Image (tube, rainbow, N blue to C red; front, top):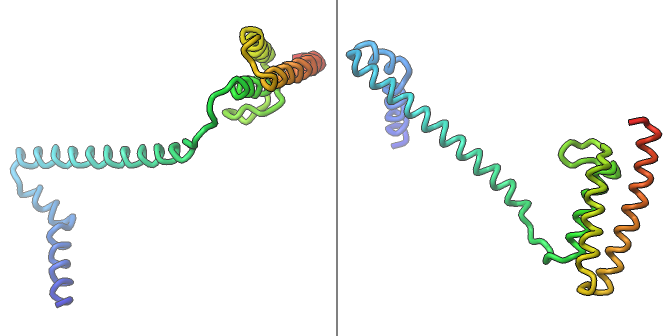
Length: 157
């Protein structure tokens, strides 16, 4: 029985071979050949689209694995995120997009001022822990900012 299946498979492979396709197109009338070419193009386009969708799905799956639960939003996490951005802007950490350290002091000053704004606007509504954390963040960022200004002036950039 396995010999019969292998014979059937050989017949199918021969029937669908490239030579058969070429002979069929040669013997077909021009309208039929044109419609076959359009059908072939349509099939190839569908295959390309399916491959694109599969690749997109894999990329989405890769991104989704980074979608981990985050801590609840808080004043401290907000200020910490802004502080990290400020540190990147002052060249303390490499930019995660470029991998390079650059000093963008105007941007850093803006981020520090934003944290200071949060500190001022939340006055009377913060816990003692939040107040200490914000004061510490602001102090550290201001000290690093002064050092970054000196370094930038030293470099002459």
